[in-house]
Length: 418
Image 1 (tube, helix red, strand yellow):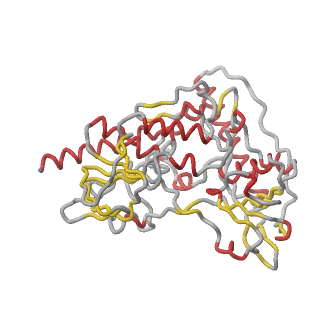
Image 2 (cartoon, helix red, strand yellow; image 1 turned 90 degrees about the vertical axis):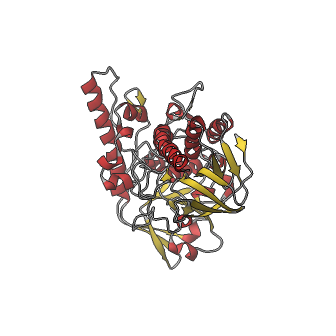
């Protein structure tokens, strides 16, 4: 990595906003093509892997999925799951392994485009210009908490999952709200620490960790599921929460029913506070059934693939629920909880894009495989940028190559004009 001291008045053929794996991957291609550019990172390269995950975090995808342009996981455990610190070291090692020019500690505050097609980039160190700009900031920017969170008593510690590190941060009994990947794994983390945990369950699906002798995500990769273009998928699937599972301790299922049988309190979706009581709706049974049905449907697809391809694989007994709720809405007296972890996601913040015209009427990025209708502006690292594999290690290299090619072409066009 080559540290860059960004200065007001600088001009670059290409600016990449965001120094995570997506931005670094685009930079790798530009370095190979000889295109002058700079990666602008508000914190430090790859910092989200170190600063944005809890202590016991692991990847939920096998290590062999980890491959960036010119750089692939080559450690001793390709079917294992790197820890938080191992992932940070791996991505940071990528940044330090080639001549990517990175301006760390610089915030991009706004991007506009002049009538002559040049982008004006307002940063914390002043205004610079660029022929092309690529957003590599991902799509998860502002932690979400419900509007009624402020009605909780001051004595109850509140924390978003983004800021959770370990059980020691929280007192007593903890309510976790949300059952995406973060919510379920944090609930498990607290549960394994012997804490009393309540979990407000949402509609997120789950997937078995292993089935018929292999990791389910390895089966799905072989089946081409991660390579199906976004346009061929239903909008509801693209908007759905990712399946929950864990890579902890070598990888295993996350079975919320088993947690309940072991003493965790499961509830439906949290809907508000009345007279010192937190209310949950009557969706728990249906949402647990839904999560199980998705996991079993994935196994059905794997069975069909094994049969179709004539693959020899061991048979396996199917999942049997170990616990079921009584049914009906539930409540929880606020005196019975000491802390809440909000794990209900993030809201994207694209306000820094100003009036570029790269967002749709709903305020979401509008693009085709990352390329927008505004000449010279592109996105990379977004979920479903092109396929289900986008936004994760599995397809970053492919997405970055496509976006970088457009930047290289735009740079040559500018040089031709000049």
